[in-house]
Length: 217
Image (cartoon, rainbow, N blue to C red; front, side, top):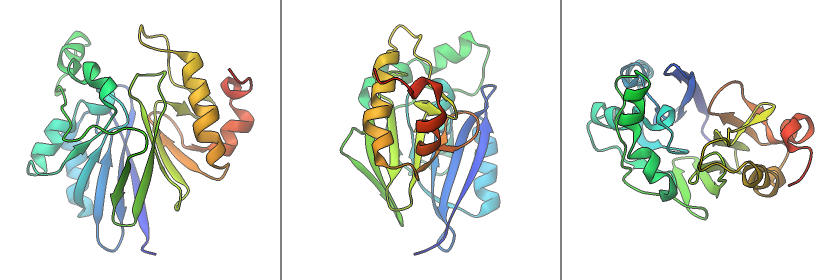
C-alpha cells in the first residue's frame, strides 16, 4: 500500500484545521475544509508539489468553506468541491454576509459541485471514506471515515475532550451526542481523527475521557 501524508494548516482567526491529505508516491491529494487564507493554502500545495483532485467539506460554517471557491480558482477551476449535506446550503449561501459582519475578508459563498449524504463514499487513490451524517452542530454536518486506514475527518462534530457547539438556533446538542455515540464510537476505538479545531484524538480516547459522551442521550 502506498504511503500517505497529512498536513494541518490552521486558517482564519478561528484557527480552523484545514487538512492536506496525499499519497506520497503519486502526490494525488485532497484538501479538507479550506475555510479561508486560500493564498496560504495554495502556497503550501505548490511547495509540496501536490496534485489536488478534490476539495472536501465537512459542513457549511464560514470558517470551513469560506476559502473553497477561491482555492478552486487558484487550482485552475476544474477541481471539484464535494460536500457537505445539502441541509447546510443556507449556511453556505450566507458566508459572505456573515464574514462581512465579523470584519473578515476573502470569504465567499460556496456552491459545491456535489452535495453528499450518508451512504455515499469519497474515493481518491488509496483513500476510501465512508460518510456519516452527524447533525446537531449544523444540520448537514458530515463525518468522513476511512475504515482501512482507521482515520477520520470529523469537522466540528467531535473534539478532543469536547463536542461541537449546539447553541445555534438550528443546533441540537442531544442529536449531536446521539450521532457520535451511535454512529462514530461503534466504528472502533483505534480510529484516529482530525477535528475542525485543536488537537487530534481517537474515538477510543473520547469514548473514555470526553465528559460530553459519558451519558447516553
